[in-house]
Every structure is written in structure tokens, then in C-alpha cells.
Length: 460
Image 1 (tube, rainbow, N blue to C red):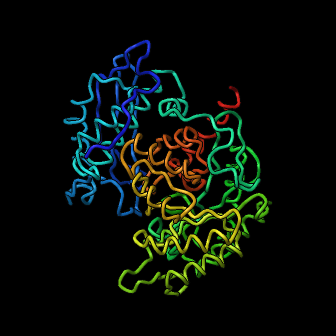
Image 2: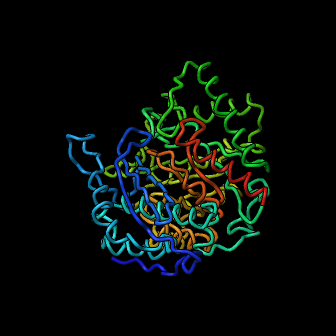
């Protein structure tokens, strides 16, 4: 099924030189969990080369585009991606060779048409996205632009002196701007739970969010110092300091509240103040602890089985006690009606609170359109691999921004060292970015790239 994407060619469509694709080559590589994923290399006739690799999620929403796996139990337990690799090398490459790499929207539309399915199940969203992102990287190199600037110009994102969604944002959360581009505020996942770690913590992510009006580099310092202090705190409580998929700590814990208390202790010992320098946020990942048969949410660490109404009441307790400013995926993705009621209760709990959709909207234009209409949240997680092309990702971003929703660009639990989402976050003027904790190279690659971009835009 074809998605309606404008075929305008981006900044280099009528450019001064040809930026045609000479070759496309895919291969199987390993992600941060040691599972296979796909990498695509593109070479232009001007000898410009680009590389892109795609991540993979552990907590996967039902509406996400299809990640094509081989299902051959003799290789990687069935997780191999040789089919996706072959689809790039034998099918996609034939169609795209000779095309102008800078015509990003045309390329993405061709990929969507070539696949021909609603969820990219024929060629695989992993194969398609790797090609889409590699084309964007090639176009940026050919135009001699930073990737964030190239994406911004390709999709005609106007400079925003007052970014969408910030008009009613309290001063503590308004973002510093060094130029027409803004660097998003990081949300550091320092406690991994749910499907992201071998722990009894049901909540998927507990995050610290630097809210002081300081540079991005300083926010990274805040996060790193608290992260290291938390290790000392855990050791003092005789708790494990191993890390989970996203680089945060993952000890077995006696309750969710105790996890919050440990983080508050680390914040204080690191010399920061809750509510002034740092706030807390969670990704509940409620799909993973929802029992459909019982129609209950089972928090094993807390020893409770809750209705959706009682779960929201628990969130309200946490909001008031622990200064939570954001709750992601508070309920399971199928219960739209309950989401609306939860949002109405949660949004009034704290002036700065965001209710964030991820599994519910899955970076999907149709689903964010419904979410806006039914008023179920105020912010959206953006993960390109949930939808499969850069252009479709941008359509979803634009719909959310027009509605005044905040944008949170996000990684996945199975990542690579590709830092594309850092440039994407800057290009779209994202309010926040989630790239994991302050450890593991695949997480730090994104934060390091954002610090590099911060230095670049200060010089312009």
C-alpha cells in the first residue's frame, strides 16, 4: 500500500551536481544485545559513502512495522536477518541504483511502493529503514551539510524561536537555544526494568531528567555524576550494580518506591536538588505487566494486582512524592478509552507533567491522528524503526507538533553505535531525547554526538 508522501526532492533535487546512487550493499551485523541487525552502505558516483544501521526493540508495540527475521533456529536462535539483507541487495538495490540520493521523499515513496504492504512485512521495516537512513546520510555528505541541517532543509522545517509545545511550558523545562536549532533535554534511564533487564522491577525505565537551564553538555555531566553516585548507593545497600540493556542499573528491588528512594539518595549525594536541578520520569511499559485474562496490572515487585483506575492512583502518588514530570505508556496499548480517562486525571496532577505515548502511537500517522483527536496524551515517542522510513517518521512528527504535543526522540533497547537519532532530534526541534543511561558505547554515541552538535551550532 502506498503512503502519500510528497515527491519533492529536498535541497539537492535540482542541485549543481548529480548525486546518484552507484551501489547499495547490506550485511548482517550485531546490535548491543548481541542479536543480528542490518547495516546498509551506499556509495554515490561521486565516491561519497554512507553507512546506516538500525536498532531493535524488546518491548514492541502491536502497531509497529514488521522487523523481518529469518526464523531459522539453527542461526542466532531464529533472529538472523539474512532475508532482510537479501531484500536490500537483490531487490531494493536494483530499484534505487542511478536515483538521486538527495530526493529523499521520492526514495522513501519508492521503498513503500516496492514493499506494497501496510506494515512492511514483505521487505522488512529493518531493511527499508536502513536504506532510507543511509540515503539521508549520503545526501547530507553530498551537500556538505551536517545531517541535522540536511534533514531540516529536506523536510522544510522552519526555524522555531518558540518551538511547538513550549508556550505553556514552565521556565524550568524551557530549552536553551544557541541558534535556530535546539538541543533536546536528555532523559537518562538509570534504572532498567521490565523487558529491558533481568530484574524484578516491573516499571521499564526510571529516568533522571536535568531541568536546570544549563547547556546540554552540563546536563550530561549532571546525569553522569548521579549515575556514578547511584552505583555507590546501591553498593552501600548491598544491591547488585550490573546494568541492563539500556545501560542503567538492574538490581532486584523490594519495591518501586525503594528504587525511587535510592535515586533520590544518589541525587542528593551528587550535590543536586530534586525539582531544581533534576526531575524524575518513568516509562511504565504497562503492556509488559498487564494481564489480559485478569484485566489487571500486576506489579510483582510491589506485590499488587491493580485495575487501571487504581494504577493511575498509584502513579499520582509517585508524581506527588517523587517529582515525576513524565509518564510514558501508563496503560496497555489497546485500551484507548482508559487512556483518555487516565490522561485527564494525570495531566492535572502537576503543571509540568507529560503523558507520553509510545506503544499506543508507534510513530504511526494514523495512530497519532487518533490519539490527538481522542486527547489521550501530550507527548509522543518517535522511533523511526516503528514505521520504517524517514519520511513517514517526519509526517508523524509534524502531526504531533501541529497539535502542540512534545516530541521525544528515542532509541531502542537493542541499539548500534549509529547516532542518527541525535541529528534527527535536533532537526525536528525535539523537546527531549531518550538514548539510555550514562554507560554502554551505543548509548553514549548519541549523547556525544549531541555535545558535538551543540559545539557546532554555537559557532554559527
